[in-house]
Image (tube, rainbow, N blue to C red; front, side, top):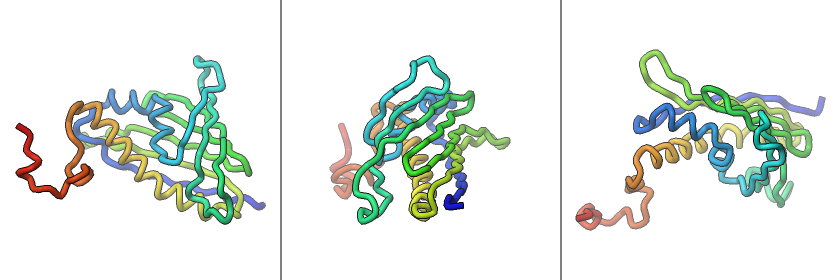
Length: 178
């Protein structure tokens, strides 16, 4: 009665530099996946490492909630389960917030590959507008961060794109490495 439920799904092309094996390996790494959220501060395994799903305590800064409503972070429980084509993450947080998040590598008929995130969430109506906005904006941010991680493994030693490098407005002549 006082809860709101919503879903959000998104898909971004997987970097062409990446193999399927690299993408799946990263999706099976809980530290990589959970830390794609820039608000994730800490992760602690609390279950047996061989458990499936594995249970973690996760500290989040809750940056999406206005400071006048909540100025501190929160610890929540996350259940992480690697699956053949990605991973499933179930979150249980204080205040009745729950979400199920499915990360998948999808191979389309035309040969393209996408990283898909599907999230189903439930929370108090009080926080639903903040959570829904965060969920929608965070998908793209986490998918871009995932692609950056994939590229870093697929192309070790390759510099970042010029636009994201300090001093990127230097002339191209100054950027040439001999």
